[in-house]
Image (tube, rainbow, N blue to C red; front, top):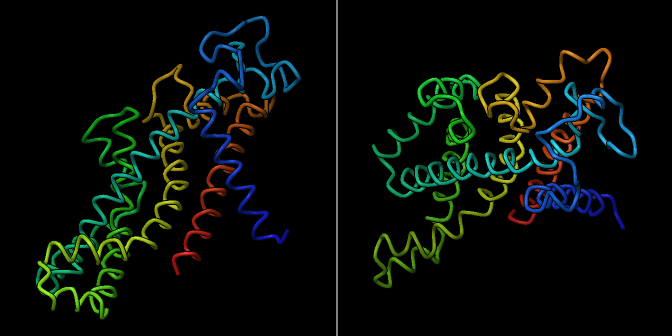
Length: 265
């Protein structure tokens, strides 16, 4: 088995395990992610507590497993927001052309000029903190990237012979866009969505670390890392192990994105 296939298999396995954590956490841990045992606080990783325990005696592995649903669902919402809005803007700009194209792309340029984290914080200030609002805020950032990629693909597909033939055979403009242009433009966009999924998890965890995400004692990954930073010198597992899970998921999503990108090329 060659290395590229091995890497893709490992990445798929990582995402599959994390998805199962989110769907059926009870299969992986029997510990309560909220209630702790004070007598077992700050215990290092062991057979009983795979990731150790936190400052109030809660099993850290259970909190990571149960917290996956918050991080993954937030990432899905963020990617959906960016994918839908960005693809619609790119389809509009690439198919209409002219002044519409110029106006849409100038708006996209404005979004690109603002750092993603700053843009997300601005949206959170307007909407307020919370898991859903953080997901929406994170989803606004990649709209520009989706729009630029979708526009370039729409322009490419719009000039192909089969699209011109569809117009020549009497196909209506919306019908041709829906049946021919949009489906044949989505390959690279889907690849980008896989990459953005990993970046969304990282951004949501960052905002959770800063205190804008889920409220304690919700076991959200960024919040878990933030709660363990005061014990970094004595209880390294509180930040290192949840952080390793975040890094593994982000890298796995990036690897799958590259594979999808090669297939769509």
